[in-house]
Length: 514
Image (cartoon, rainbow, N blue to C red; front, side, top):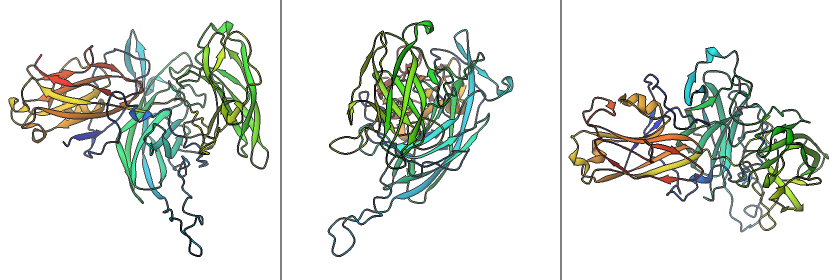
């Protein structure tokens, strides 16, 4: 069954639950009528593409400086771009190997806009940029990735970085390199606290449509909006952490466990890198599920001029009694000034290529804990994925019914909208306002509904976000939804409120007149 997907502005509300906002003025959303959806998104037990902890794709040294446009990441993700360049048995005199085709390239561009809000008495209140002296956040990371093995390990095919974003649309452009035609997911994450680490808890925005990649394709007008909390007391966003941005500074983050006065344990050791890398390294403690960092240290790594590099890290402000945690590491392998999901990652090892996690933090210092970046799988030789857990996308899906009958019981010409809203509806609203203020929506026209007892919806929404799942029927065709006597339905148990996590969820909606 076809449906229309809106390519509209997307935002992520961080740390703001069960709040009501006044509807903004009607916008004119850009509507993408493409019906493409990603494979493997099939229910509540799926992992929404497991967008956060996925594939290693981390060796793409694209050397991007990401200045508001020029695409970085054309070789991101280690996607085997050079696989067809060598003589792998397909050339020479009578080789029997199969020739690997050349990779394809495409361009994806658009804008990322950061909109601010403050939480006042439990409500998110929009904050106009004129009320702030300067842009209070750090850089923006934009990534395009897929999951070729359908195992939750995303491979970045292109990235870009907006080094010095400002208010209003910030342009980006990335060159995408893939082995063959396919679909790509695009999202953006904001370094809200300016510590140069893309953390699990920091705000991000997603583009709900899949980018259809073919050789030479040029995809424009990808519009992403990130909604970020403004903290007038210092930190730009609500993600924990101090600046920690120096090459020799240990940066405290969310301070899990104990008070700040008690956080003086040391976790330290050497770090070894399997390439000739000179630059910044990151050591961090993360939760067992990979979210974090809890604590971190940004330190210097020096290459040996051949094939390896080394450095020493020391987290000196670790809180006691954290219990079981992961000790992870990373280098800025794509040279964009951020520690992001496209970078090469590693972890604590008890022997070469032997991951020693988890570790246990109690009340004593932990010294001489070696980080290896990356860890290689002894069987496949592939890099182990030890990145911070990020979940850009999850999928909300299910069916929509009207009572116990068919949609033919509705007035002829009726349209139904299934929406993932940013805040709770409390009055009748225009269709355009609903669309422009949704994470994603599906529209079902009368041609889709007539003769049917149910239709299926599919919404791509941010992971770890607060939203409201509602279905509206426009029975009088006046372009206004949620009117008296018009059928509606909501998901969840509290006026449609749903807190997404890291997995897909299924909600079947039965419409009726309140």
